Amino acid sequence: MSAVLNARNLRKSYGDQLVVDGFSITLDKGECYGLLGPNGAGKTTTLRLLLGLTDPDGGELTLLDHAVPRHAREARLRVGVVPQVDNLDPDFTVAENLLVYGRYFGMKDAEIKARIPALLEFANLTHKRDVKIPTLSGGMKRRLTLARALVNDPDIIFLDEPTTGLDPQARHLIWQRLHELTVQGKTLLLTTHFMDEAERLCHRLAILDHGRMVAEDSPRALIAQHIEAQVVEIFGESVEAWASAHAAHYAERFEVSGETAFCYANDAQPLLAHLQTQSGLRYLHRPANLEDVFLKLTGRELRE
Image 1 (tube, rainbow, N blue to C red):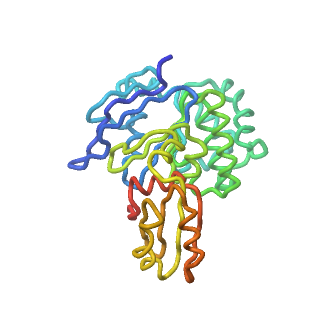
Image 2 (image 1 turned 90 degrees about the vertical axis):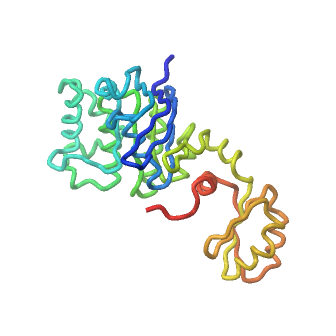
Image 3 (image 1 turned 30 degrees about the horizontal axis):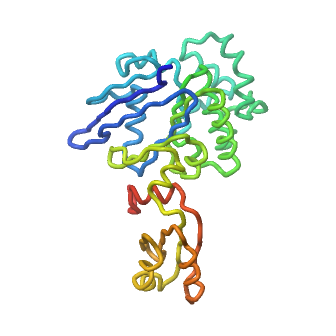
């Protein structure tokens, strides 16, 4: 079976700025793949290249057996897109938004109307079928945007930060629905700034920085490859002096950011025992996670 998406050495520059530098990826049916990276890392441009919305300067791309961008229009007939910002039509009802969107794919009204009840049930919006968009909450709008992306029964769905701005209840419902889609055999490609979301949903993910892929694997494999097993976060006004005197003795690796020292160790017990003798310091002991990997590979400096 051929890959749902296959990209090789995609490159894109704007003027002298190289935005995407040799991006390669292969996605199989039923896989959820994540793109992570700081602001300006090239995620949005990468998505646009993969969708055939932006022409690459080099490289090769096949999407659903169609060469892109040359046959991008044909490929997108079997693609769903959840944009970062909801762009629902406020003049239409919930059901009308689905109907009008389906027409863009050349679907007949009868075919679209037959799909609407299942889409509304999927989005938990059956009771909102005939209401206008401005009356919906942010979570409802996001769920409707996801349902709209499924109106053409796509094989692959691109999701750009699908849960940004949602409360925990709405996020968990979206996560459940996305998991259901992969169980059904849909392929998902998503960007997110939420590391817990990426760990929960993604079978594999790539971390991008300055236009390049700096790491790719499953979340658990990335954590095992790049970070010690345990992390101790130490807080307090005197933490910098403490770290200078003691951190190297108890941790394989450490860094100080503001009033927090991050100590990475495969065995944290000696450090924890030492900290119990220190006054004026507070600490948190936890297993390493994907956010630790992300910060190690892309740095802690703010990107704007």
